[in-house]
Length: 130
Image (cartoon, rainbow, N blue to C red):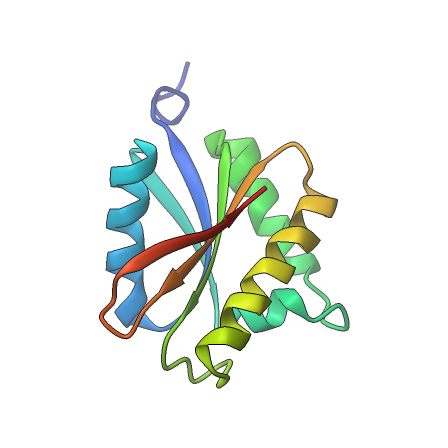
């Protein structure tokens, strides 16, 4: 068994905004007892994933790599306050996160998927789990 198979991984679909990376990684590692978090980023990730018109095949391929190569068993979708890539209000972000989680669950039903919100104080909150 390789070293990666011994460690517990999660995969996180997050905004590229550097302000949210560390708080999210710390929260996931603390609350889900994982050793590593594979991060897939796009500006305004929750907005991209929630819009059915967007082609998310490249994101899905990256998720598959994390699942296949690192045995990731949990997938996180993150939205955050003051997002330049998805400049909507907090309520809309939370709606986008829920839509994104449901969309991904339909595509990746075998994976546990959790939606996270990062507030203006950089606090992480779970808002949905499928």
